[in-house]
Image (cartoon, rainbow, N blue to C red; front, side, top):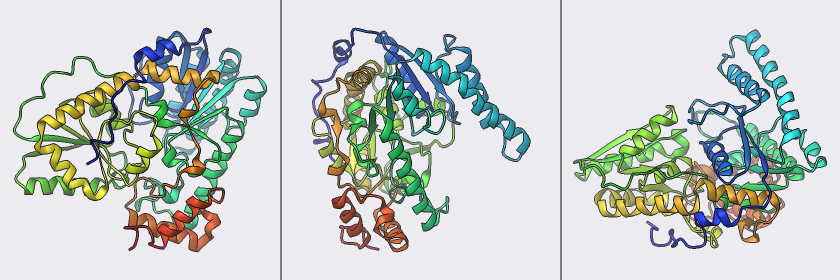
Length: 458
């Protein structure tokens, strides 16, 4: 466990920061065109509370249904485009004619929406490597003097050979397909970097980036801590553990289940709840009842969406990852989220420690909630986006990906990752890694593939 080093006392960032960073003029934001874990819903809320005009449009509706406010102020073009996108997603592929019709309608509906946006918006915040028209509109936005910010959330820019979601066994990608996907992601990142004013990305998943990025964690995940959740936890015999994997293999779910069984073998009463493929409201309901939230085992970020939701409810979060030490170094000038961060091989010890110590759980949950209130409140994160938009963001928020040597990725056990990298290099040479602009990182990946990195051998 690294609880002593992963939390720094708050001080530099607080809600007062939001007030201090407000610009003199009111900015008009367009947010879209995909929602990721409620990020843009809450960013919109923060911008509006600071007095800015923000419109969010989701043209890639998902199954998790993140609750949001009804927005009657949205123009008809936005409402129609969102409605057409939902109909497109809801139409099964085996209804080929109907699917084609809705796909064309959805794509066509983006044209009036985009025309409205360029006529009325100052700043475009794009999400998860999406755009209106495959990034073809970006030169026009620059020509018109619009400010563009692209926010990467991890798997949209992380090399597939380092990504358990891409290389999960149930997806069945061949090495040749992996190499092709790496190149497509590299081309997408390069296209965006050529035109965007600001890139926001996690330093530990920015291996394909070539220009400095605003650190995802320095900017923060916009959240609003739940009110009235400071009462003592419900007294019960069993410790209630909640885990909500979007992709069980990539999140290390089998190992987490096994760790829970080992706790039971030690005589501990454990109530384990797994929430998969259910609406976000169900996840929040389970989090509200839990004692421990276990996020994932192979993470390259300490407080992702599910973990941030747990923290907003004052719940202690356990997250594992090979990148723990690299994250601490990358965020040397940024308050680090207070989580129980363990290396994958330390999972049993970390989980047992939390399960046995109710006071430690309460303390960690309280710290996590306070961290969100002071550093990641919707208004505070929105104020940082305002500074990204008006060009006044400090250098301390930015990270040069050429200086990052993290090569263990996310969602993959180290030995499995090494085998994938080895196969990629055998098939396509070191050029297939697409990190030739970062010689030190390339050497690190080759060492890992050869088993020279500790723990990477078969």
